[in-house]
Every structure is written in structure tokens, then in C-alpha cells.
Amino acid sequence: MANSSEDLRLWDAAAETYATTVSGPADSFYRRIHEFLWSHLGPVADLDVLDLGCGHGWLAEQMRQAGARATGIDGSEALLTTARSHYPEIDFHQHDLTLGLPDPARRYDRIVAHMVLMDVPVLDRLLTDVAAALRDGGVFVFSILHPAFFSRDIIDEGPGGQRYRKVAGYLEHETRWIESFGGHRHYHRPLSWYAEQLTAHGLVITGIHEPPSLPHNDIPDTEWTEYQKWFSTIPTMLAMSCSPSDRTTKLRRG
Image 1 (cartoon, rainbow, N blue to C red):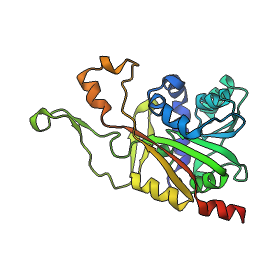
Image 2 (cartoon, rainbow, N blue to C red):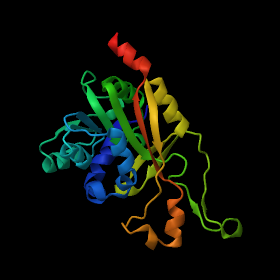
Image 3 (tube, rainbow, N blue to C red):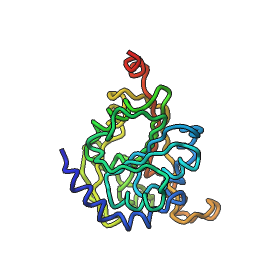
């Protein structure tokens, strides 16, 4: 098992930079999946919603403003300090996600994990608890960096001057070092692994979204450069929605 305590230390060290860099709803990653996320969540008013890996709390606040009873869980106490100071109406808990959920008996109508799972070294216990924590009709939506295309070198001098991303070693699980926010570890797993793990833990995939990669600055696509137009055609993140399988529901009902 990877040393999750070292991951949490790195995120505590990166917390201030991360909280000022990832600027909530204006963030590029969120803008890419906004429509997919909310279409699968549906109306959340009066629902119990868990923001899993909530960071500095801005997405949990979006859920609360939409009428949900929002809860946030994250492994970084430093990020949660910021979250609690900005959003005092939300219940935030510090917990190592490699250990699953802090209260496996608690139930939720919706669980969201935005750009989290690829930074957690072990997911088995967490996925078990997520499947068990969803009420009948519940929805789990998560986004991750795209396993195939994120962190792949951009080659500008392909055949005939073609530009492309160089994909190599895709199927092997790998721990990578990411410089963003001061540095943290990223755990690469192929997309098929995520699909197999979700199924094995009693979840059914109900949607997959590979959004175009957007420029960092929010400009209309009619003003994109040729490079930005090309960059948008290869997704660097993806999102998936899941629900408890019929078998999970039947077992839950006894």
C-alpha cells in the first residue's frame, strides 16, 4: 500500500497555492464537466450530498446553494481550514480516503468526487463504502485526469508537421510526480481498471464524458488560436456517473 500519510503531507503543503489557483466555478476543469455533472445529479434540493475530496470546499458550497444538505470530506486538514473559514454552514470532516468513509453507516442521495480519485493511492475500501453509502436511486459522479491523454508529451513535428500527444505505457499502473501546486503524486490507472473496479464494488456506469480541453482563459471558441482548437480535440480529463446495481439494491433490502 502506498504511504497515504506522505500524500496528505504534500497536500497540506500545497493547500494555500491550490486554494488560490483552483478558483471554484471559474476553474477550467469544472467548466468542462459542469453540464454533465448537474445533468446526472439532477435537482439536489433537500437531498443529502457528499463532496468527497472536497478540498477548500467551493463545490460543496455550490451544492448547498442548490438546496442540498452538503457534507465535505478531505484528507488535508490545511485545505479544510480554508473550507471551514469560507463556508461555515457546511459540515466538513478530515479523513484519509484510503480508509474509506469515516462513517460507513451514513447514507447519501448523491456523492461527488471532482478531480480526486487519481490522487488517492488505494481506492478499494473507498469504492466499497461509496456503493454502500448511496441510497436507492443514488448517484455517484466523479471526474479524473484522463488516463490516456493527461501528462502526455505534445509532439509538434509529427509526419507532415502533424501535432499529436505521445501515448506510451498506458496499461501499466504508475505513480507519477505532478509539479502543480508545489508538487503531489498522481496514480495512473487505465480506464478499464476504473470500469472493472466500479462493477466489482456494486456500481453501474450510467454515463461517461470526455470534454474538450478548454483554454485557461475564458474566451469564446470563435477567438481560439489554431493551437487552442487542436488542444481542445484531445480530452485531458473525463467524468463518469454511476448508480448502485440491481444486485446491490437487492442485497441492501435483504
